[in-house]
Length: 74
Image (cartoon, rainbow, N blue to C red; front, side, top):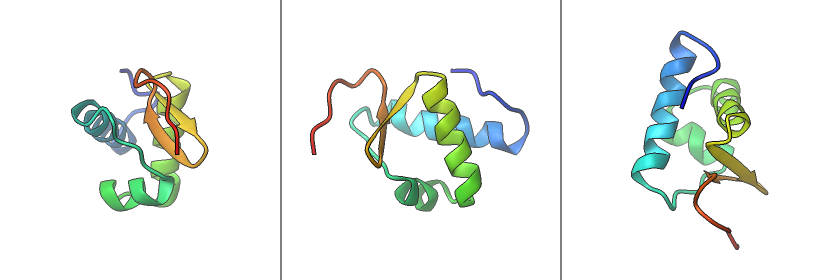
């Protein structure tokens, strides 16, 4: 995974991706991710969006999941 920006935001990208690597079934909403990662809403939203654009995460409804984790059903 390559972060699309540098600085503190890159650390957030790595932290988010690391959590999804450690827990393949993890699914988080933006609000849950903000609480888990302790960032501001815009920073977490940007990092999640960047990871979706990098095709390592995908967004299904309000949830972010690993792109390689198979289908999700609510």
